[in-house]
Image (cartoon, rainbow, N blue to C red; front, side, top):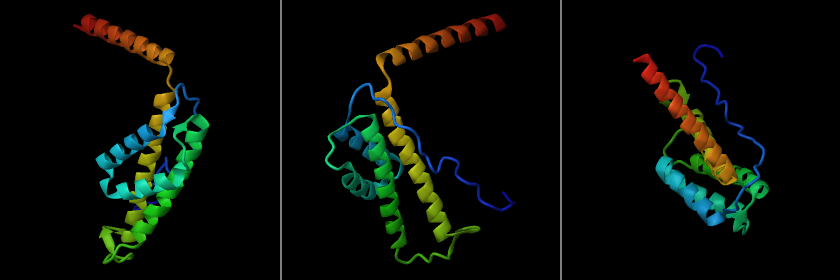
Amino acid sequence: MAQGDLPAFTAADGSQADHDFATPLLADAARAELLRFMAERHQGLIPVAVEAWDASVDGAEVFDGASWHAFSEAFIDAFALRAAEQAGHLDGVDAAEEIIPRRNADLHLGRRLTRVLIDLRLTLRRLAHYVAATLDHRLEWQRLMTRTRALDETLKVSVH
Protein backbone atom coordinates (compact mmCIF):
# COMPACT_ATOMS: atom_id res chain seq x y z
CA MET A 1 0.00 0.00 0.00
CA ALA A 2 1.48 3.32 -1.06
CA GLN A 3 1.35 6.39 1.10
CA GLY A 4 -2.00 8.09 0.64
CA ASP A 5 -3.80 4.91 -0.45
CA LEU A 6 -6.87 3.88 1.47
CA PRO A 7 -6.61 0.61 3.39
CA ALA A 8 -8.42 -2.42 2.03
CA PHE A 9 -11.24 -3.97 4.03
CA THR A 10 -9.96 -7.36 5.14
CA ALA A 11 -13.39 -8.88 5.90
CA ALA A 12 -15.09 -7.63 2.75
CA ASP A 13 -15.72 -11.03 1.13
CA GLY A 14 -17.01 -12.64 4.33
CA SER A 15 -17.63 -16.09 2.88
CA GLN A 16 -17.74 -18.79 5.54
CA ALA A 17 -19.09 -22.30 5.90
CA ASP A 18 -22.55 -23.02 7.27
CA HIS A 19 -23.23 -24.15 10.86
CA ASP A 20 -25.11 -27.08 12.32
CA PHE A 21 -27.90 -25.45 14.30
CA ALA A 22 -28.74 -26.87 17.74
CA THR A 23 -32.23 -25.40 17.43
CA PRO A 24 -34.04 -24.10 14.36
CA LEU A 25 -33.91 -20.37 13.70
CA LEU A 26 -37.33 -18.80 13.23
CA ALA A 27 -37.46 -16.44 10.27
CA ASP A 28 -39.57 -13.88 12.18
CA ALA A 29 -37.09 -13.77 15.07
CA ALA A 30 -34.13 -13.45 12.69
CA ARG A 31 -35.87 -10.66 10.76
CA ALA A 32 -36.67 -8.79 13.98
CA GLU A 33 -33.05 -9.05 15.15
CA LEU A 34 -31.73 -7.92 11.77
CA LEU A 35 -34.07 -4.91 11.67
CA ARG A 36 -33.20 -4.06 15.29
CA PHE A 37 -29.54 -4.01 14.29
CA MET A 38 -30.30 -1.87 11.23
CA ALA A 39 -32.27 0.60 13.37
CA GLU A 40 -29.35 0.82 15.77
CA ARG A 41 -26.53 1.25 13.25
CA HIS A 42 -27.83 2.01 9.75
CA GLN A 43 -31.35 3.41 10.14
CA GLY A 44 -31.39 5.03 6.70
CA LEU A 45 -31.09 1.61 5.07
CA ILE A 46 -33.99 -0.12 6.86
CA PRO A 47 -36.26 0.00 3.76
CA VAL A 48 -33.45 -1.52 1.69
CA ALA A 49 -33.03 -4.30 4.27
CA VAL A 50 -36.78 -5.01 4.30
CA GLU A 51 -36.88 -5.23 0.49
CA ALA A 52 -33.80 -7.46 0.40
CA TRP A 53 -35.24 -9.72 3.12
CA ASP A 54 -38.56 -10.09 1.31
CA ALA A 55 -36.78 -10.87 -1.96
CA SER A 56 -34.46 -13.44 -0.34
CA VAL A 57 -36.57 -15.27 2.25
CA ASP A 58 -38.53 -17.23 -0.37
CA GLY A 59 -41.33 -18.16 2.04
CA ALA A 60 -39.06 -19.87 4.57
CA GLU A 61 -40.43 -19.76 8.12
CA VAL A 62 -37.62 -21.74 9.80
CA PHE A 63 -33.93 -22.04 8.94
CA ASP A 64 -31.43 -24.80 9.57
CA GLY A 65 -27.68 -24.26 9.14
CA ALA A 66 -27.50 -24.86 5.38
CA SER A 67 -30.67 -22.92 4.54
CA TRP A 68 -29.56 -19.99 6.74
CA HIS A 69 -26.20 -19.92 4.99
CA ALA A 70 -27.87 -19.90 1.55
CA PHE A 71 -30.34 -17.25 2.69
CA SER A 72 -27.55 -15.09 4.15
CA GLU A 73 -25.63 -15.12 0.87
CA ALA A 74 -28.79 -14.29 -1.11
CA PHE A 75 -29.74 -11.54 1.35
CA ILE A 76 -26.30 -9.89 1.22
CA ASP A 77 -26.35 -9.96 -2.59
CA ALA A 78 -29.88 -8.51 -2.73
CA PHE A 79 -29.02 -5.86 -0.13
CA ALA A 80 -25.83 -4.83 -1.93
CA LEU A 81 -27.68 -4.50 -5.24
CA ARG A 82 -30.51 -2.43 -3.76
CA ALA A 83 -28.21 -0.22 -1.69
CA ALA A 84 -25.99 0.46 -4.72
CA GLU A 85 -29.09 1.37 -6.75
CA GLN A 86 -30.21 3.72 -3.98
CA ALA A 87 -26.77 5.36 -3.82
CA GLY A 88 -26.78 5.77 -7.61
CA HIS A 89 -29.98 7.82 -7.51
CA LEU A 90 -28.89 10.49 -5.05
CA ASP A 91 -30.15 13.78 -6.44
CA GLY A 92 -27.81 16.72 -6.10
CA VAL A 93 -24.68 14.66 -5.43
CA ASP A 94 -21.93 14.82 -8.04
CA ALA A 95 -20.12 11.46 -8.14
CA ALA A 96 -16.78 13.16 -8.83
CA GLU A 97 -17.18 15.77 -6.09
CA GLU A 98 -14.79 15.43 -3.17
CA ILE A 99 -16.77 14.55 -0.03
CA ILE A 100 -13.82 14.40 2.34
CA PRO A 101 -10.17 14.97 1.40
CA ARG A 102 -9.01 12.58 -1.35
CA ARG A 103 -12.39 10.82 -1.51
CA ASN A 104 -14.98 11.56 -4.14
CA ALA A 105 -18.64 10.66 -3.64
CA ASP A 106 -18.37 7.33 -5.48
CA LEU A 107 -15.37 6.17 -3.46
CA HIS A 108 -16.80 7.38 -0.16
CA LEU A 109 -20.24 5.82 -0.68
CA GLY A 110 -18.68 2.61 -1.98
CA ARG A 111 -16.53 2.25 1.13
CA ARG A 112 -19.48 3.02 3.40
CA LEU A 113 -21.51 0.33 1.63
CA THR A 114 -18.65 -2.13 2.11
CA ARG A 115 -18.66 -1.40 5.85
CA VAL A 116 -22.43 -1.87 6.01
CA LEU A 117 -22.13 -5.21 4.21
CA ILE A 118 -19.44 -6.33 6.67
CA ASP A 119 -21.72 -5.32 9.56
CA LEU A 120 -24.61 -7.27 8.04
CA ARG A 121 -22.48 -10.37 7.46
CA LEU A 122 -21.32 -10.24 11.06
CA THR A 123 -24.89 -9.83 12.32
CA LEU A 124 -26.12 -12.78 10.27
CA ARG A 125 -23.12 -14.81 11.43
CA ARG A 126 -23.78 -13.86 15.07
CA LEU A 127 -27.33 -15.19 14.73
CA ALA A 128 -25.96 -18.43 13.28
CA HIS A 129 -23.49 -18.80 16.16
CA TYR A 130 -26.23 -18.11 18.68
CA VAL A 131 -28.47 -20.95 17.47
CA ALA A 132 -25.55 -23.29 16.82
CA ALA A 133 -24.40 -23.20 20.45
CA THR A 134 -25.67 -26.14 22.49
CA LEU A 135 -26.25 -26.28 26.22
CA ASP A 136 -22.99 -28.22 26.55
CA HIS A 137 -21.12 -25.39 24.79
CA ARG A 138 -22.65 -22.81 27.10
CA LEU A 139 -21.83 -24.84 30.21
CA GLU A 140 -18.23 -25.26 29.03
CA TRP A 141 -17.93 -21.51 28.40
CA GLN A 142 -19.34 -20.81 31.87
CA ARG A 143 -16.88 -23.26 33.45
CA LEU A 144 -13.93 -21.66 31.63
CA MET A 145 -15.09 -18.16 32.51
CA THR A 146 -15.45 -19.09 36.18
CA ARG A 147 -12.01 -20.71 36.20
CA THR A 148 -10.47 -17.63 34.57
CA ARG A 149 -12.15 -15.35 37.09
CA ALA A 150 -10.85 -17.46 39.99
CA LEU A 151 -7.33 -17.40 38.54
CA ASP A 152 -7.52 -13.61 38.11
CA GLU A 153 -8.60 -13.19 41.74
CA THR A 154 -5.75 -15.44 42.91
CA LEU A 155 -3.22 -13.44 40.91
CA LYS A 156 -4.57 -10.14 42.24
CA VAL A 157 -4.26 -11.36 45.84
CA SER A 158 -0.73 -12.72 45.35
CA VAL A 159 0.49 -9.45 43.81
CA HIS A 160 -0.71 -7.32 46.73
